[in-house]
Each structure stands twice: as structure tokens, then as C-alpha cells.
Image (cartoon, rainbow, N blue to C red):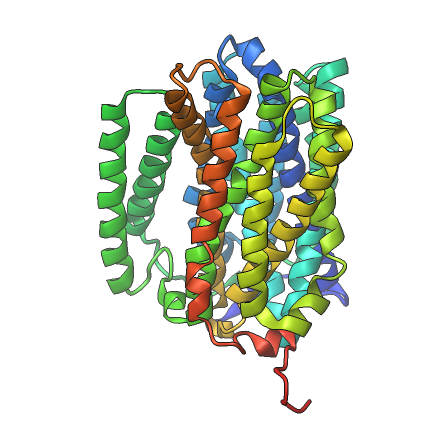
Length: 477
């Protein structure tokens, strides 16, 4: 690949780029985690039910999934610095619009615009880090990139709850303004204006097919969760599945596919995408279900809910200190199997929580669950790129980012669907939620996370060992 640059890369540029990507992840994760605790109050402002607001979350995540595939093509055309800076500006402006909206339609539109900015913002920087990192440093690089993304969820729930309880939910979006403005300045100053001189053509058909597939499937799931017409939901699901089949056929045969599927031939990547996607759906439901259970089911205010949710993300953060050592000691296969089963158990344990459960026990249960899910998430993400050659890293990164964002969006929709099924099981409509509904919803998500580890059995014991540094008993250093 030929690259031209109008600026010489400065010493330490990779560290600066990594910091910028980390800051962008921080802003995105803060935005998502803050919203969860504000859903009931936002729903009251819009005169709708909290479950209906799930479209405000899924529309953002779906937009990321639809537009991430073209981020690499645009960066090649106009340069990484231009794309990254413009994306930060769009994300920041859309955040202001989110805070100014007065109904669900306006809010959803602003979230879609915000998603377009996010889709162009993170993958471009993430790819630059992946290309510059040798295999032996991949685990460390991914840990650095994701660390601030775990700090943001730690701050998000209590901060969002505090703002919502003592001020207005609109200020949770205005917080992005100073972060976005600083990011724009740093990006323009420190990222070189390089671009790919090999201009590959734009795969319009691939873009349309993947877009239709993603939006149709996600809309169908979200519609079922909102208690919409089954006929409409099934129609969109059929359209989405047909578009998925057409996209698969086209992308495998196109000379310049919008999404490169060649990484699917790599076993470790396939496992990380297959079972990893199911795991992301399961854990993606937690930030949606927990605040609703605490506020709607247990009668807590947003600040109390946010402080308790802090337990999950504190567990996420603390695990980062020992993840590398655990993977080096036990290897990817063992960790994914045993920790995956343990993560499912901790997710199921949330079904045992009630309004009378002492806060200390709730925090402990959520902390342990956060520890397990963080270790599983990091192992999956690292394993996915362990065997991908450098020349295919771009396509693998784009494919992983697209499916990752889409499955996280599906997690929110899956949580809403689980609540609707629980309401049907208990004999009441989906507009009224009871504490017992959340019990069934968490058990369903736990079952999904158990299914997610099935394909890990097909991995060899030394899978990804050159990345983790794991050596089986009897092997010499």
C-alpha cells in the first residue's frame, strides 16, 4: 500500500495517536454509560415509556455499525487527520443537539448524527495503532487503548445519576463539548496528514447491502422489544436476513469489497467473532437492564442507581491490572472456557437481587460480574487479532469494529425483548415492568452467554500463545 504524507511523523507520534484514540473512546463510553441512568427521566420528558427509549441507544450503535465500514475508505481518500478531526467535530456538535431535543424523533436523529461522527472517529485511530504494533506487543497496545474506555463507565453511572437527580439530563450531553474541542485541536496538531495513494473504488453495492442488512435486523429486534407489531418486525427481519445473504455473496466475490471477509478463514478470528458476538450481546444488555431494574423495579433515584452500577465497571477496571498475567499463565482457551462459564454465573446472579438486598451485597455481586466480563472481553478482543497478518489487519479491524458495534446494539434490543417475554410470561403488558420481569431477563442473558463459549472448545490449547506468551507444562522457554 502506498502512502503519501504531507507531514513528517514526529517522534512519539504513535503514543500521541494512541492517547487521542483513548480519549475518543473515553468520550464515547462516557456518553453511553451516562445515558443508561437517565432513561426514566428522559422518557418522562418525552412522554414515553423507558423501554421505548431503547431506540435512542440502538440507533446510535446501529449507525456506528453501518458507517464504520466506510471509515477506512474515506481516510484513504482525504487523510487520517482530516477524517479524525471532522469526526470529533461532528460528534461534539451532535452531542449539543441531543441535549436540545424535546421528543423521541428529534433525539433519535441527533443520536444518528452522533453515531456518524463516532463511526469515523475511533476505527481510524485504532487501525493506525494496530498497524504499528508488533504481535508481541498487541496485548499491551489493546489494553492501553481500552483502559480509558473502562474508566469512562466507572465515572458515567454515578455522574449521570448525580446530574439527572440534581440538575437536568440534558447536561450529560453537554459534557462532551470541552472534551471534543480539546480533541479537535490535538488531532489537527499531532496527526500527520497522510493518505493512501492507491485509490480503491468505492463499493456502493456492498455499502448498501451491509447497511440494509444491519438496519433491518436491528430495527426488527428493537421493534419487538418496544412491543410493536409482530408482523412489521418479522417483515424487517426477513429483509435483513435476505440482505445479509446477498451481502455475503457479493463481498466474497468483489475485487474491492467494502468489508473484507478474508479474516474469517482464520480460526482464532472466527471464534472471537462467533462466540464473542453472542457474549457482547449478553453483556450489552446489562447497562440497559440494571438501571431500569434499580429505578423502575426497586424504586431508586438515578443517583442511587448510578452508584450501584459503579460496581460492575469498577470490576472491569480492576481486572486490567492482572489480565496480561492471567492470559500468560493459562492461555486463551482455558481463560475463555472457565471464565466464560463464570461470567454467565455472575450474570445469572443478578436475577437474585431484590429491593431488600443490602447495598453491600449488590455492589459485591456487580463487582465480581464486572471482573469476569472484563477478562472475557479483553481475551476475545486480543485473540481476534492474534493470527491476522499485517496486510489483512485493516479489513479485520473494520470487520471486527462493525460486528462489535452491531452486537452491542443488539444487546440493548435483546434486553428489551427479554423484558417483553418476561411480561408476557407473567401475564401483563410490556408497558408495565415488575421486579420479577428482570429476574427472567437476566436469566435469559446468562443462558446466551453460556452458548457463547461453545465454539471455544474448537480452539487448540496453544491458540494465540505467541501473543499471550503462554507455554504449556513441559515446554521450554
